[in-house]
Image (cartoon, rainbow, N blue to C red; front, side, top):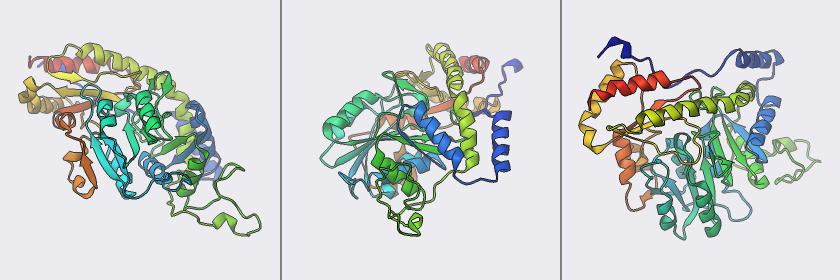
Length: 394
């Protein structure tokens, strides 16, 4: 192999510059580090970007999932209850599942569509029982689920829809952004995601009651973070310590002003980031569309292109270890698709769950798939060189 084909291809690329650095310094100079004006501003900007009413920032996407699920247990009408059934995809990140079982819900695990790697819509409706109270959909690595159809199913059946959009910020389907279809919708701003606040997450909703519950749960279960006069919690203005009244068994999952200040800057860059990511995604689709070794992810709607998925075809499974070794030698970083199939991890023994029929697609993808990173930088050369490296095998 010629030396000029050697690649420096990391999984992640920095997205900050002097603007984020200045935003952090401004927070330090203000001497206000904990949740205040910057967090409120970022929540407002982010919800406006998605054309939804309410946004609550938290310290991670995983925390966003925890609060989102927990909030539905405290709704006045039709709350979730222990033992209720929730339909989930077989492939996702671990903390899609953990908050569900931590709230004593039972997982019903449904296989994914092989081509999109998203939950198989055909199987969702068949998997529903009288015990099904919630469906959690995950837009895998920037690729939207068939959200309009899934929402129709939920509306018809009276089931809550939660959208885990932590990997797919800015994706679009049916002229709507992902992360806007559910009663609750979650996002992550981890350093490797579309925008980064170091650590951070967001929950969006149009439901005032749910928003009030989330804001209370985020901050110790108290009442003081309500932003509306039509508060779900009735406050006693005569009580001297009303702000320290605890109504719900909450957490402390608040972000800092530094997280939010960087988020405000990053959100302004997001559309351009996605434009550049989609340009790289176009290269990926065209370079590998006729590749003999790999299946690639089929785009559904308009992907925000988190990464590039590769799944070994059965005919070439015998080359898997050789190609992985070759990638490592050539500084090509790769990793498991999202978190892989949850059933393949030892933790599944600790989760209350059942499987709807089988998860053959998820099992195969877990064992024989990987992804390469995407970025707002031009990756055409990296993708071309990776393709050249593997062509020697066929």
